[in-house]
Length: 303
Ligand SMILES: [Zn+2]
Image: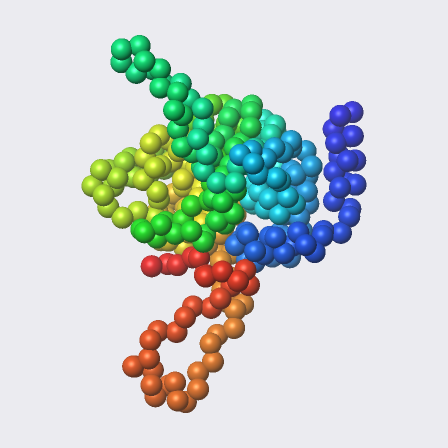
């Protein structure tokens, strides 16, 4: 009965035309939007409207929620589940999305030696609670999957990170193992993820450059969240440097962001060359990469 009512409500919700202003938010804030096929975009539009309508939203730290915020965050949640059979129902245990304008100090009591309690809290960009809220810094969710590279060329998006934790916690506690598609996949998942996790721990120790943020070496749950950020944020580099990890995530998410990106890049016009630039080519600086339709610097690179 409840399923019938829910289905009817969702049908009504997605029957309306998708607002043009919302498409602008997606073009501006979600890099992947430009790479999706028309069918994938349709599905993303439907899923994000369902997600947005079915969750409670709260602005925190003085932030007033706007359509741009709720639509962008919902789209990033829906991007992760675009290929999953449950779609946004995979977030069934997430009740509320709390959004801060930027990083925030979370209240925390920490016992120190001598019976002292440290109540200064800890600085965070986001957090996800089992059967509870997902908390995000808008500044770090809006940074889109691929735009904010750190000094090592890694990319960050706190929304992708926290929603990956939510998918992980939909299948028990946060252990870096989401609900896979069949029971036979768990052994292979464990083997590939554990190997990549151990490698990241060693690389963090030796300070070697990584596609993956060393924070992923904290524990297997953080590893899955960090790997998800790289999978959507820097798919070409992840596929090249961590082939098995990429394939495992591709099989789970049932999406291939690297192939999607290459397909999109082929649709971009090539820069025209005039005879003058041909003769001066050796002295000229390398041509700038094509600018994506999002209007931001092209975020992905294979180097
Ligand atoms: Zn985390």
